[in-house]
Image (cartoon, rainbow, N blue to C red; front, side, top):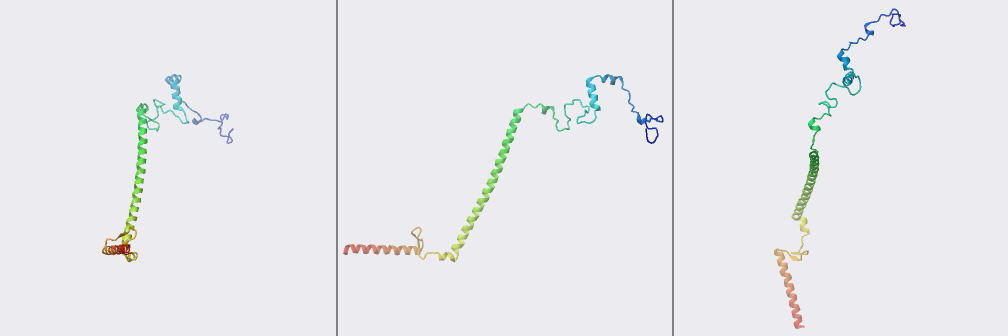
Length: 188
């Protein structure tokens, strides 16, 4: 019984039902009743009226074929591609190209590194050459100059006038020593 006493319960004699309490269903036609006996039509009808769930029949002709806008769609020409050997060949060619690009990149990096290293070596060499030339031109080089025109490393006379004079003087000393030896041998 309703606590307000307004006749809201069907058991109450004062109950007056409203239209909201009735669920009117339109009668089915003969075609609809006959179609409900057909299994395919019944399944399609049930799929059309299904509520919830992840799959809902949208009335497409082939339920196994994905929509053209979906990610899993593939055209018939792509589905029945028969050139598997060609695809494998293309795959191998792509791998070879990637490997060659990798080698080329490493080659370029090595070349750049070697160019930088050689530029540094050449710069150091030029610096040492310029430094040596400056040292030879300065007064410090004169301190290390030999007082005689003779190279003690190569044991040769210098190609200068002083070198010629030194060579002439040394030859005179050797000549006089040979004369003394000769005189001592004869005169006893």
